Length: 315
Ligand code: RIB
View 1 (cartoon, rainbow, N blue to C red):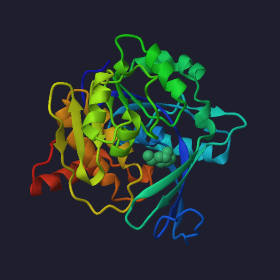
View 2 (cartoon, helix red, strand yellow):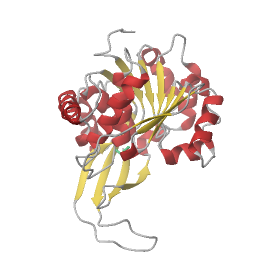
View 3 (cartoon, helix red, strand yellow):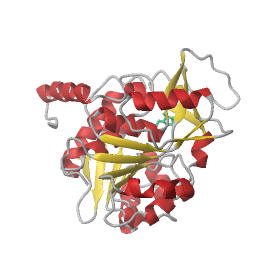
């Protein structure tokens, strides 16, 4: 493991999607047709986005996953490599389409997503077994839930000691009770995901349930309200978000997770969370998933402006 925090090594095992983004004046109700506005294809997928987010900030990132043997697969790999991510272990799945996310973004910048897993569904335990040694060498392992849950479960169980710091973004939300939660250092649900995972409507109760089940820290992302950190034996701590004019919230969570993984080695969670919140906020000011993820220079400049106005973290 490397020790310096400026270029930590991060392994991301997760999804790679092509995003078909349609701007809508408002979300349609069931059975209704709404006239769409702009349409665009952007590279996305929570795994790829988080890998790109960490790489743009300066981490040494390897992505593990699969794309289909279609033209989207080629474009997705180009985009990932173009952002400085090592995509050498991303496999092309024969006879399979790449993951596709159909995303509607409304006038308030909120989104709704329908996901067709495609090749992401073939990221199986055998694939992980082939790459386990290299994955285990990273400082940080970043996971999401757009690949089969069985694969995430297998990977967590097979990680040898000493293992990387494990961050799991439980999105899209699923029942996590089968996972070895003791192997998860930091869980980063949004408020909606938290209540689904812990089967409780009250955030404090839900987070405490996860801590009691073995997770070390729960960081609940709250969009424009920042994030709340829950850990055993301490009161929850709220971190505010800087004000931005959000036009598209897609991948704000990915910017948060990628920045958290980049910032953590060498920093405390208390220091890393405000940096991750700033990256997430900045991502909402640009349309699309990967196009919106901030660079180190962009994040530095944003934090400098913020510091001029109020208390903001120094990188
Ligand atoms: O988190 C945003 C991502 O979720 C999009 O890029 C889309 O691919 C979906 O997976």
